[in-house]
Length: 185
Image (cartoon, rainbow, N blue to C red; front, side, top):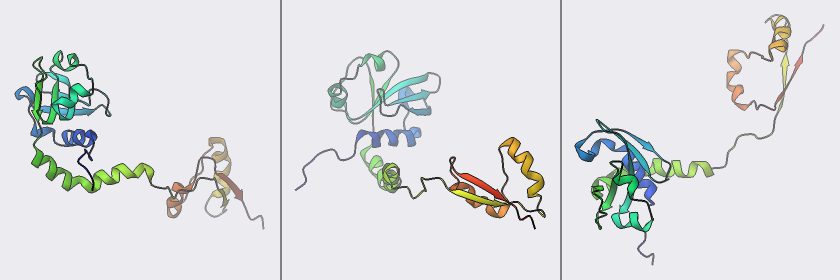
């Protein structure tokens, strides 16, 4: 039997705040923007109308703030806020705690779970991209101006590709080599 524990980490709550800033009004002020601090303390910065940028921490419960050992003065001295699902402790210092609605969070998570999973596993997917360079052969055509364009291309270290071959540019690696040939008959 799987026991009770937190399966969704705090980072998911942070994303919820980032994507739902309009649902909250700290100090009665509109949140103009939310800046992700990439899970460092404070988790986020909220830009509030008429106030500016303030630190914001996100926790499942108020008591987690103390358990994590976060310095409260960063919030208390800078109009900081704590977004929290369970206000289970008064932190003192007049730190504003804003309750996250469980039902709204749950509905948001269900709607966005596929995207959250995809974003989470994307860095671990095996890339099917080729990792070794290729040797490409390019024919210098007299009719299409290939021979006339060859000297300027060498001087500028640039070679154009015809429109019907643009899809190949993606598979050309920086270390790839291009060999030019011409029919001299």
